Image 1 (cartoon, rainbow, N blue to C red):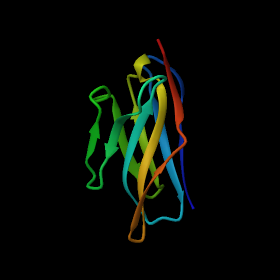
Image 2: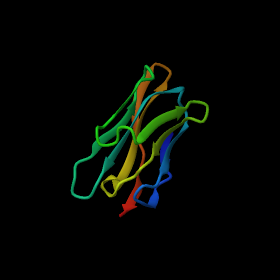
Image 3: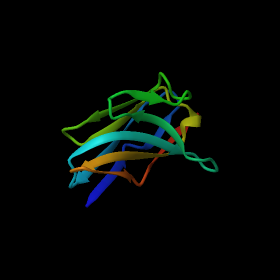
Length: 119
């Protein structure tokens, strides 16, 4: 059984920072790739940042230069460091991780963590 849990969300003033964590637990071999998405009220879920199998990263234009995705394989955790936050960053943030169990790969979603940025 695999579980993915996000944490680190909260209320912050514009210009502030937060670090989100996405911890995977249970039976699996390794993390393949990982993404962070967000969904604001009334809007579609959008991809914010990704960490590919090769180790490369990519970001939505709206967060480039402000957000950084990283991973700690030993801790089985993926992070999203968010700096210079803006009110438009307010959303529920979700992580999606691809996990290997032997030769089988599967995607898992966390339950989401709320980020609210006040002006």
